[in-house]
Image (cartoon, rainbow, N blue to C red):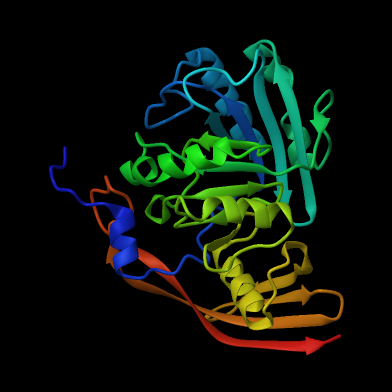
Length: 301
């Protein structure tokens, strides 16, 4: 066990590590309410029955679905367990809710339908925002240290569908906030930031200062989208759409539509920084990808 006081988020702050291009690459999600404590592996180290947790993990892996546990403290938020099924692939956004009387009811859900682009029978489709703040301290101390205060504010906002959640990636950028249905990631969110970020998202705009990216894109494309938005001064969420991307010898080239009448052509160079410890408990240092803007050309169409 380490006895030093290394904190990955403090280290990331100190070296001014950019946030863009760091959102976890996830296209399909299952959010399952499970109050109480979570171990490092939340799904199998919570109070969920082991047989259920193992079977759900197997089905989720087969369908390319990421399972995240959510909670609002140590008790259930209602008399039925909340479950959300979400697809964040490009423009094919889908978000649906199930109220579970019994855990085994979830094993009757065909998660392959998310992979196929279909709706989930008996699940209620809804487009209102869902907000997750990672507070998974057993996975990384920074998520608890920085996330708990942010989550308390988020979950207390009137009318907001906000939750604490298990590990979502990027512990060193805590506090982390994920906004659905877009799967939009924010990092270094403070107690003074979260309410305005949530309100702006609900109104269809984003903050480039905290923006990590959209989870439906690979990391270099997320960086390219950030540069396109920055150069075009465009914070409307739905006004920027990926038209296409391809690997280059140096990194990636991507094209985005900007509103109804502009187009951005972006070239990004991908290199590596010096090796860093990326989590509080990391045993070894790891190189970090660096995304530099080579060119961004915005033209009328």
